[in-house]
Length: 323
Length: 156
Image (cartoon, rainbow over all chains, first blue to last red; front, side):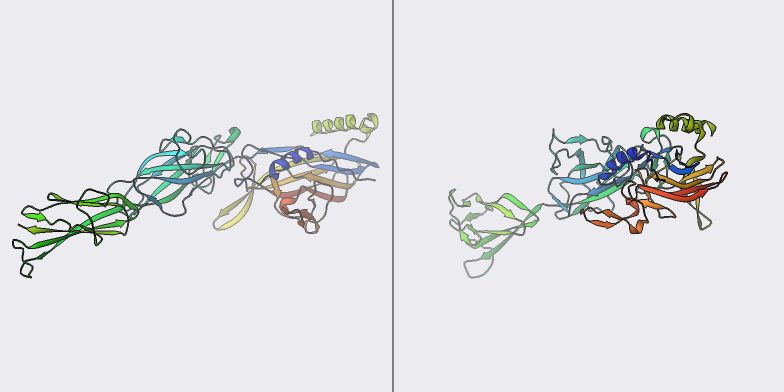
């Protein structure tokens, strides 16, 4: 008596199996999928083999609302006037869902707050905002529907206030919220899921926030001017004919580089510029407006320092005689 | 029940292509499938399992699929074998007193004795998630006797 296996449902299984041959969704079986189960029995009665199927029980997988948000920045993002902060929002639920994206620059503990000037979907995934290519989003607006497991590259565009101190850091957070609803895990939104099924809040509470950090990348120039007096008698009294040596030290602090730094100083009233006394870093500069960096004359001195990196100093000296 | 039996009879009759004798040997055994959601309930610090209708099912939920058999005939049903292909969206949650197949129902055995093909193409010990079918074998069901077989599964 050969045992016969009638595998009703094996085709359905094969199809479903193919769907799951790909890496399983993080969020599990897609919402709306029908699960059908049928058992088959074979047996011998009255000396013949019989086969019988059970009824098929069918039910639907409901939708889980879950989301994950992560910063794509490996460290603080240097910013001078503007910056782009990269985030990734992933639909970790098991059905298509739209998410409201809100960028908040006012995170508790910030030394200063940046200004969010816009959000964008990084369509070409290059980490930069390309107007006309990337899709701009209003802060607080919803994304297009993300498929289950679907990631979305989100750019948060910020500007740095001029008052932000060099090297100060500031955090900006991005929150993604399922538009169907949020709440404690298990919160039910009846009929709000795929195919009219229910939607249920998952472990993420259907809301996820991530932070990225900005650091102010700016150079700050300070000038310190000092004077030494040498009188004709070997002393230091500022009497007529005494020579005053002025020293101007430009100090660049912070980070980055200042471009085109120039120092200009007028000759004080009652004094006369002493020709040929202009120096930069101890090296003489000609008084003429020529190829070298400086020029000097009866009205004042001017020195072009060019680009100076943070941490650098430049010292300019010149001499005047008290009339 | 009687309507379903009749349907089954007709299916057998048409499928097998022999009419009158088939009616004489109408399937004596009926199968009744059911599924319940297994909910962990914690009350007063004690956790227990409660069976619910599968009105709301999410990935990770545990289910119990039950097949109830009844021999409504006058003769014993012998060599009784119930085979249940697992629906693709679920995976077996635990082994029980049944045989399993990890190759689409071609071969059956104890899970620990079966091999599956790993991601690297090499054989590895079969796991619960590899199970494609479960199968129960009973020597005989007496006339009028009934019982049930079940397996626990988890929504993938």
